Length: 562
Image (cartoon, rainbow, N blue to C red; front, side, top):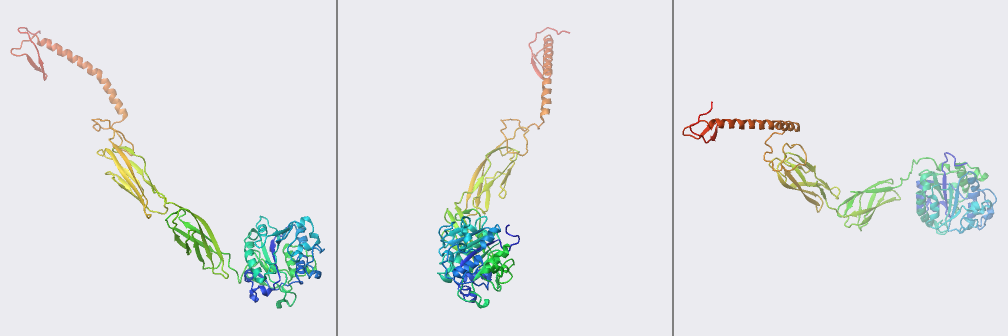
């Protein structure tokens, strides 16, 4: 057997308080327990819960075993003397789990367990069938007043279904009165409600007093009326219930009805249960939801002497909210959003606190560590120096990086060559040098941001412009080379490689023909000279032939051959 499906609550934590009447605690009828009254008003307050006997021990026995043992009304009867069944019998038979804590008790986990008040305030050691090693292992101590062991059990992955806590007499109000008990609960209960058990299960917390010393008019004089409130995720919100005839036996009947356990006897079987405290949404007198807050910092990288905007986000509670700040450097501020400037390079703990307008007020905090860094230089990135041929394009992009986030960077250039363009918005440089622009150029680029003081960077870039090679392309690029001192470069039109091969082949075929023509011409000239030597030309030794001047030595009287 396990927890039945649809149980109105699957975990219950009980804190037993001492010796205060209902109207001594609840401010609604003249009491002074302000925290307990707020807890009840925001959750469930039982108006008609009464005791079984007086003093403490018989009431604790009634809560645990559904019997009214008058022999214990003087307290101090201990231990393991009651022989009737009890609540743990029912819980274990159902396969459910339990733990019982007592503040500052000795010998935990053993049957020699010794709470400060013995069985008077801890009924588990009054019943004989609890005197076994396995059951005594569930008797646990916790240190007053912070109860770390008790809270740790609520924050385990699988907390027990039933957990009981008996505070010491200073914390339960026995010795310290309403104010002492109220202060104790004000510190402890919020931690209970924030625990794993209360945030992951259908848990409820019952704060209950054992006796009250005075009758209550609304119970018809049947017993002493005591404070009892249910809270936690399983309980209704802003509800008061008044079941007729409710008593300490109703503690048992409520758990038995919720978990479908059998009754111990007619006392608990006949007691009204408190299931009306569970399972419905709040409709009137509803408490505000829990207050929560967080904040962001912009920019996310924090630099010294650069303002940071802190913005809080708050929800729950009751608006309007009051937001305050502690920046960890000795300065504070208020407002949901504000700017702050850190002047030192180090880590600071920034704490934001939100307070709502509910009664009583809720407060929530959020903390972050802010690492403040030194300002860094602005970085200007250029390509390396370039060489380009005339008539070719050179294109590149200037880029910048500023460690100061959110700053505006302005780019500029000086000594820009004629015909070159530079876009300061995109950083794109373009130039196609003309044939008259050979030489070396130094171009200066500058980047500056709008910080105070401004950060800047200046760099030079060299561009070597060479005359394009013969037939060189005028297309885009950043390369180029020397013309090698060519005298006729640019004289002839550009032709393809195949055309050059045909031309060279033709020239190679033309050379032998030219040599043959030269030999023949020389032979003809020699033949003519011999004929002229036979002819007498009076008064002259030279003759122009075909535009050339030939000088001959002739012999007189000879006739030329025919």
